[in-house]
Amino acid sequence: MPFAGHLGLVLDEADAGRVIIRLDWAPHLCTTGGILHGGVLMALADTAGALVTFLGLPEGKTTATITSTSHMFRPVSGGTVRAVAVPVHRGRTTVTAETSVFGLEDRLVAQTVQVQAVR
Image (cartoon, rainbow, N blue to C red; front, side, top):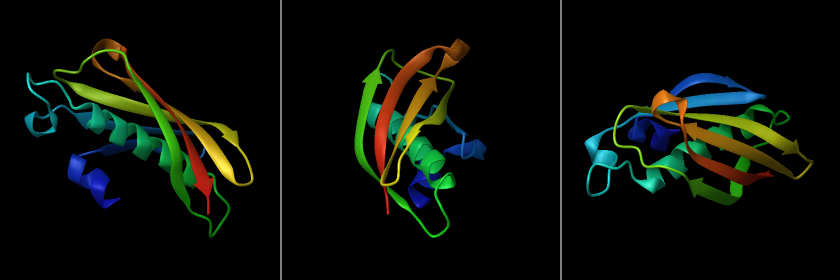
């Protein structure tokens, strides 16, 4: 995933039941005031959700995001954020994944639910 590498995402755990990806705060990923950009948090969540989906697909299948809804709960102004993605539903043509993003002191920063097409 070239884009994930460009953002600096680090894969800590990955299987069909759970994916954990982390990202260190960096000034070039921020908005004014040193707050991690919401789009960066959404990209982190989308990457984790897509990967947990992909790892549970049958051989030869791939996936693409159909919908993604993110809720932001608190700003991130330093440290590391950690995304934990789990599949909520695996259907024949779609998979729904939920990703929780945690910041300092393991506090919930954002949550994303996405639907992935099975291709």
